[in-house]
Length: 475
Image 1 (cartoon, helix red, strand yellow):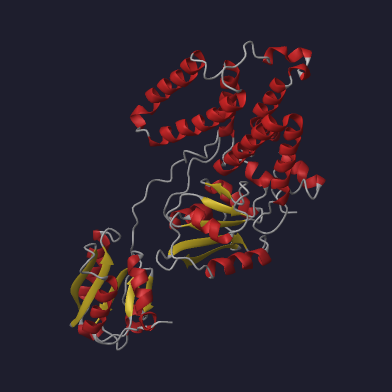
Image 2 (cartoon, rainbow, N blue to C red; image 1 turned 60 degrees about the horizontal axis):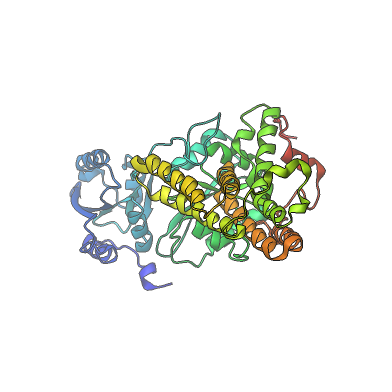
């Protein structure tokens, strides 16, 4: 450990101030405020980040400090902490490195001449948005609140739903530069404790400079292997009710500061396919919604490859499906049309994200007309390819998981290419490759990604496919 990390405060205020000024580089950071004040008859100093501390709280604390008389001051800082600081979250600190981290996290530091410890007062207030319903994880019925970028609000939303002392919420940090706060949530009596200890050890021993992309950076640190497999290893949700339900099922939830969603692990394929809507309706309706989503996911994966295979072998088309035949020979090969449309759909999606809100609707209409009508009229694309790719593009939004949607997309493109070059053999090889991707993929805990299908657990598989009545008591 370096001398800088070992440095401790002394009883001389001026020396302590000089040390913090040097570490905080106050001459180069206008938002780090150093305020001279008095506590009784002693010189004192406040360090805090402008924008994290409210003026009203500062005024109340300053009024209290000015009201102290010399006779009230104890001989050591511990007495002052126990009897005089009129605030809930106050810590005594003496290590300069920890003090600097606290100040940069938004806490206010009070140092008094003659004391070798300072007071870190957690009166920070981060700029936040309201806990409104998330844009991505909407439901037909249910709660309309969602996670935000402030981690303490997110833990409160979970606590509101689970009032059980077995709910544990542990705080840790990662990143030598970012010192990002990470919260580990689990039910002490339901979680797999062996897996929990592995996750705790991985987080506490992370050798990373910063979690630049928040959850994605953490995910890549926790599971660095098999980057070539696109199927997601984590389930993400912006809904606190979904996170609470997963906790009660024995899952582990990770919350990362500055990220408005939760990471749920371990997560298998069928876990990621589940949604909150399945449980906000009666069992028969929930089962219908779930089965519809499963079937649509299969359609998005196999619709265009099967159609391409039939177009390459017209004599295989059953009599009742003659209408899928193309009336005219395409001017552009079908495989090229399908691949271009796969790329164009993502291009339109990226354009919609970067388009100002007031222009999104009119530009979407223009893009739809241009790409649809004129692209067909010009001969670049046939009506059939436009129809099937439009179905695929819209159906992708039935999945709440973007990661799973893109995994299906990559597998569909692979299947299209293999089908074009290998006909039926290529199609069969493509299905085998997709199955291998799923079979070789493992959850973060090392379990099968296809459980309870492989290994087969009939009761669990039935519960995953059919939405049964919720049990109100633990078995």
